[in-house]
Image 1: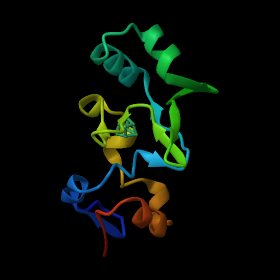
Image 2 (image 1 turned 180 degrees about the vertical axis):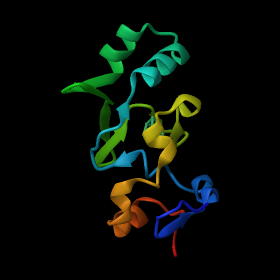
Image 3 (image 1 turned 60 degrees about the vertical axis):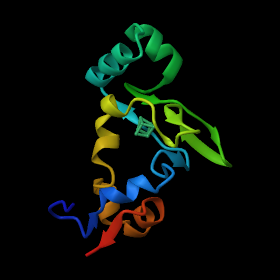
Length: 122
Ligand code: SF4
């Protein structure tokens, strides 16, 4: 899979043997929009308020998904540590859907190569 303007391609087959490296590791923000908050809350059978209070942190005017300590680093609270997969995959945020094609990685290819075994330098 290629994306216009990116100096690398992505092979989604790599996800099958990966242990979820894009959901764990160094701490980072996992932004969620209001629409995504509603969709994830519905999936979890929670009210928006319950979902926000239990799973999100507010950073200024935006919400990010909480992380928990995992293997010496951090993991998204929705990362299933036994199955090594996302527990809300079908309603995961846009930020997760667009990985590894993030603007930041255009200039930081080494970082995305370290994080994702599916990266193919072009
Ligand atoms: S929401 Fe799912 S895909 Fe996104 S970081 Fe968390 S576990 Fe990974």
